[in-house]
Image (spheres, rainbow, N blue to C red):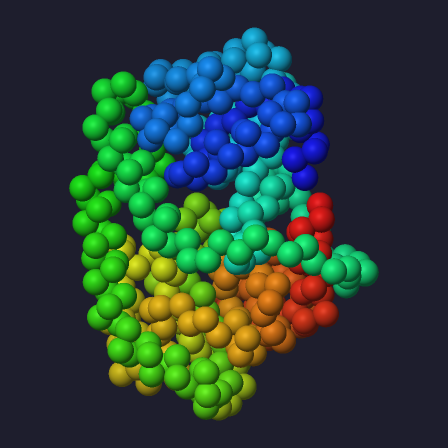
Length: 368
């Protein structure tokens, strides 16, 4: 995919916290690309240094004019970034399109585990990917590439997020006007991740019993509901105001439309554990006489192989190439992967898609 940047002038904005964009830059240089990298805070400086770095220390109101002038001066041809909903990135994308530049956006949630995808134009809610499931069914599947296995990324992500926040906090005077897209106060973030680790330990006993039932296949057929991070940018692309509203909507829809003798399994996002705990909500719904609801706070290594169906806000579960699930269900209009409507909630269809198109979709994502 990076071959499309060969011998082109590329501007990189923010990447995920960590060394990912530095590694991408190295590969781009190997292909003859000329780079310009914009850093917005000391956290960016920590992970990306070099002569191509431009430090933006101006106000957000001046950013539009600055990025336009920089793109013209450096004769930029391509804008490359992670997170197309970040406020600085949205402005840069608008200006890039006005100048006729190509825009490419990284995404880490389409294929899991072990994949990061790169898409032209935008991702998720503004993706140009075909939304008609017939398109994917017409594709001829071929062997999937074997990715490099990255293992458990949560400890690394927590470390990168913490040192990024600490660097930003200690050296914020160097970028006095910078406005981050979420809170990154260093001590607050460190405390939250300590709380997340404590919650994982506290919930492990309850979750272990579910693990055992999954592994022994004694749990009734269930719908897996992977919850999104409450402050994830993709929440802007869905019809729900919050994760809690999504949970309540799914439970109501499940009670009305799900087959009898099935269970709804709500899977907490591991990156949201430090911030939110929905245990009391699960217990309240249980007492309310809601359908059978199971709350899972830790990731089970085998649930991808055993779930029969999944419900999600977006691509939050990712499409697992090794998974053996039969159906994938989405409660979102922008990416319905199938045509069998299980029910309608607040005017929004609950779509399902059969397994045949899943392999073709994975192939489309890995080859485009």
